[in-house]
Amino acid sequence: MRDVSPRRRLLVLAICCMSLLIVSLDNTVLNVALPSMRRDLDASVAGMQWTIDAYTLVLASLLMLAGSTADRIGRRKVFTVGLIVFTLGSLLCSLAPSLEWLVAFRMVQAVGGSMLNPVAMSIITNTFTDPRERARAIGAWGAVVGISMAAGPLIGGLLVDSVGWRSIFWVNLPVGALALLLTLRYVPESRADHPRRPDPVGQLLVMALLGSVTYGIIEAPAAGPSSPLILGCAALAVASLAGLLVYEPRRAEPLIDPRFFRSAPFSGATVIAVSAFAALSGFLFLNTLYLQDVRGLDALDAGLYMLPMAALAFLCAPLSGRLVGTRGPRLPLVVAGVGMAASGLLFAAFSAESSDPLLFAGYVLFGLGFGMVNAPITNTAVSGMPRAQAGVAAAVASTSRQTGGTLGVAIVGAVLAAGMTATPSDFVTAARPGWWIITACGVLVLLVGLATSGPWAHTTALRTAKSLSLAGPQPLPPPTPRTTKAPPGA
Image 1 (cartoon, rainbow, N blue to C red):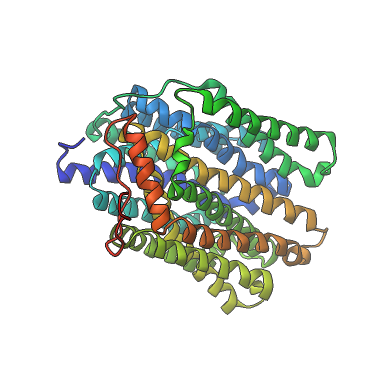
Image 2: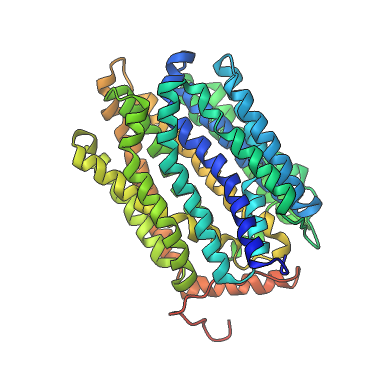
């Protein structure tokens, strides 16, 4: 990978960004189509939650397995299979005859998607070895999320209003096919020098933990929090978590290396990723249902309403990447936390839905905050980790994002369902607890970002990089801000 020419490195980056585009675009387009799908399939709020969470749940469960498998058998090989499965799953989703089949085919999509983002990030990490070049590449990668947020509502609105909700899955077909052809032609194969062995027990424990938590949260409003089903989910979640804490540290090559979390920036990036993407998924879920079910807008008009949020996310993502490369992650994380918390507060405390100026101010603030958060998450997650395990490290960051997205839809959707009555006018009142949750997520991004981006946190990252380099070759150095000197003896 080091001998790849600058032009080919940029081409590899573009191919990897195409895979992120179809995965991110799929989520944003789907959110705009939810009300239409709900009417056509006669689904409940919980049914709509499952169309999103069935995807993110499987994705979060398999990301680390996909990352470690790619390190072992070849990143291009796994990436290619992921493109094929994701594109096929998209085709099946467009043909789904019922909600149950749609949920099942979304899970097929997720199996393919799990082989794309962490593996693509691993390819980028091994292609761009200079820390500042890597930060800029990751900034471009993050900008793709902004593009999907900007284009998704508009493309989804046009397709839903003109052709129907099934057509939203057709967008993935030509992009996936083109990315597949370019991957086979231009992406070089790479694998880890010392890949980890499979950890099937750890993988099953992760799947049991995420699945039981998500199922319990989504089904609690209908089944009751004290029902045997929900109590059983809680017991399974506790047992799975206990199993991970006991079993994983005893393995020589665990699915998740506990030593990664000795780095305060890495641990902070994990918490921030969960919080930020929980806020994003909850934000999109509430706004899509409000604009179409309460205000009565069609899908295209709803997409246009959310355009300010998407535009700010698109513009701020590359800026965030440059700031991380030159000044470190603290400033982008502070802006991200303040922006998302302020946006949630406008809806939770000041009923921003009742005033278009407040509504658009909330969209602008959230777009600003979310646009700033992605680059520091990804860059910090892979910094200080052995390059040979880049797939696993990137997969932990991606798993945190998808876990946050899953929990955001599950929790916000659950509190919305619990507060809803028969009349749509109660939506704003029922959604208010969800907005307070989104506000809390923004505050958590701010506080954790401040706590894990200072000199002490930087020292823990250097110490972790040194300890990991003894067990594996070529650690990725943490990005050092120009204005901050490493403490003596670090």
